[in-house]
Image (cartoon, rainbow, N blue to C red; front, side, top):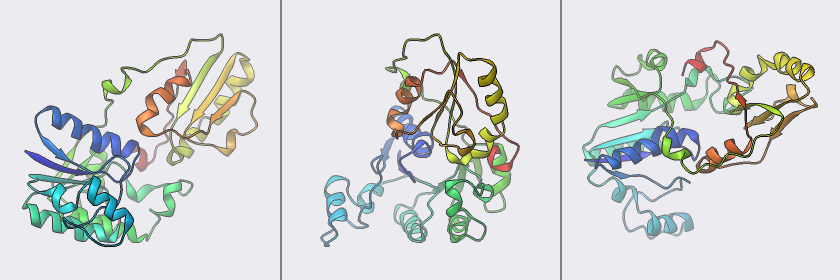
Length: 268
């Protein structure tokens, strides 16, 4: 069996929903075609000879859509959101005579206004039409939670829950720093969870005020509501998802917190 699996971005979304499933399908004996982690544009047809430098390079190092999809028994596309994605998805399905699966692990209808993703997924955004067209025309949709089945079932009755997970192999060679006398409370996430951490800001301030041996460390976001507070450390240096386990371990958390407010987005 062969799967063509296409991620949308070089991030946790791509890793946990596409790359790692592809890895374990290969362990089961599947052949998997996909573009590299750092996604690039690739030509449609084999033997590209145009004048676009990026496409010329991709044709040599990666191949074309025609080559990658050849012989595919199933096509998985992760949350494609560009107009050309509709044409590409339909063409690949027709060429391969294979089912098309649309993968999505977020509630695109409930992105918070203070999220950096809101500039793409705002009410009336043209991206909704693209996503909905693809979901309606796909042979199936995969999601991360039962709640997302309810969100998207009006678009397609064939929805399957593939829960999120951790890959134990990611943590095999991770080194943990030596512990200190300080107690480190930590939070790691993205700006899509700005409101979640905000929910406990007063608790964080109180703990730090009452316990001088406690530090609070943040990775992945720079929340303005915790600026200028003594012993709050915000890790701003970027890390690729491939180096994320070690980056997280380097912060040396004693206690990790994951506050979540009650809103539809967090049910995804």
